[in-house]
Image 1 (tube, helix red, strand yellow):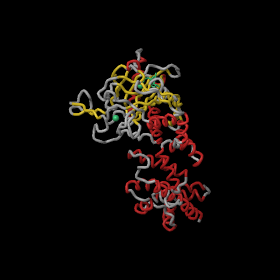
Image 2 (cartoon, helix red, strand yellow):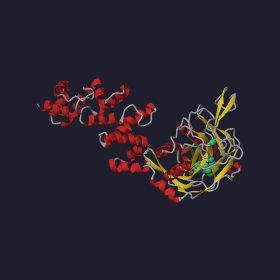
Image 3 (cartoon, protein in one colour):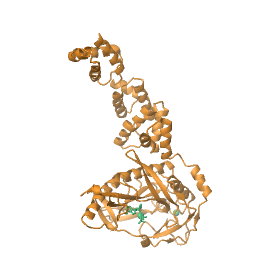
Image 4 (cartoon, helix red, strand yellow):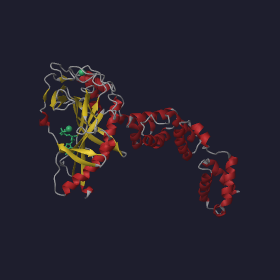
Length: 486
Ligand code: ADP
Ligand code: MG
Ligand code: ZN
């Protein structure tokens, strides 16, 4: 199989539950963790005669997302009924949007491996979430295998938006980056915490392959309702060679919804994909068209928080960072906030960037923590950076200090003291090491004295090694010259 002759094409649909106080079409509270079925009313339980009313804050939050994605917010919005039966959907239809959605024609820029990619956004539309099914007893992980299923209507009717991309995403890795950075954006807008465990965001991935350089799209398959970034990438990584294999054997791809099994790492067909007409979309008769005042939209635009793209530019301008570094530090609000705290606490912008992107980020990844929740505070990291700058600790020893600060949850000064990691600038102590090194290497001493000045580097290295990386290189240099020139 020749992967190089084919290119994958990926399009994503992301669902986000909005953190409004009340539901999309009724006044029931949107909460988490309460007893089941306490936040219900005739509207969200679909009793006859109950009428929906659009939640203004949900429209605002959805519009904020749309604006952040550079979409055009449409003045006229129509809600549609999307009909299907499911036990967690008492109306047997979902109120959603169809051909006149909230917003269209946007774009989102995201970083993949230091490169900025752009993905067109097809639309952002509003809808309501279904209730939550809980499968219990037996093989509770599967509907078919569990003894019983229970339904909690608290979630039913939670405001939900769907963001649909154009098929612009070139790889599984890019798909993961796209979703992670889009999630960061939504979190920063303050419209959803995007809590993954609670299923506040989930996505469908559509993927096809085509001959390298071809303009035409191949037939796609769809992976539905994923909520793990890692599984998404794995599933796409598995689906690409499967499709290529089918096509190279002369077969065709069926438009299907697939299931990814993380245990076997394979994708298998779940069902043939539904089409729009299967849902019998029709305009929701209980809601008038929603007219959105452009002045109101401009008011939202004027009060948007600073978004990652703008922040990246500011980091370049204010801190003198490279575009790639600013991209890493600026595209997540939490990491950007941490970095700015380190700088505000007195560390230089450049070393603060290196430490934040290097040791600190590695620590977060290893411990599975979010920026700002690591075991080193910004203030302590700033102090460590300053201790390197003033020569109290060498750069190499500082990495060990950082690791021990995490282990001990301790201050940098105390850590240096406790583990004896301070830079040795004490002349008497270093003179002894210098004397030993000089005595042990007569051949190199000969070379130096014969005019080969660069041998000094060898001696500095030996002294550094003997001191466990803690010797002050400047002092060592001076002492060596004095000893060798004598
Ligand atoms: P549906 O309504 O059936 O979900 P859409 O036309 O709205 O279908 O497309 C859904 C998603 O699939 C979009 O993100 C789109 O970019 C993506 N998509 C459409 N065609 C392809 C294709 N050939 N390859 C990859 N992705 C595709
Ligand atoms: Mg779809
Ligand atoms: Zn209700």
